[in-house]
Image (cartoon, rainbow, N blue to C red; front, side, top):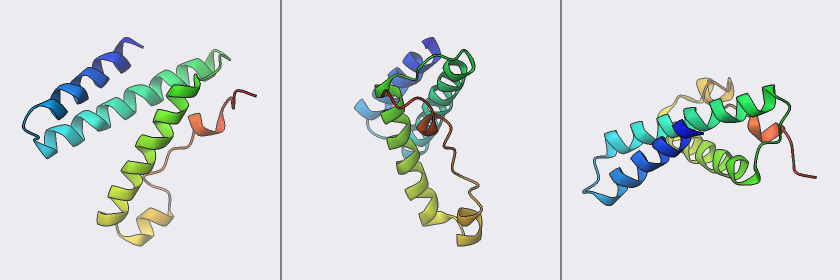
Length: 94
């Protein structure tokens, strides 16, 4: 969770300054990776993925896939090379 908090802070900091798009995209990618790692660890321990984390993951993946769809050839997109649905398919909170 420390990695997630740190990555979120990095994104916040980069958004509050004059925006450097490359650095911001890199920070967002790092945040997504840390959130996925945290969700994977929770799932491995048979613990629920918190609703906010699950929702944030879904939002960030959607934004990432929309960006990649703009620059990725359709064949790679259809192959699912940029999609990862692990936490979306875990505990639903029901």
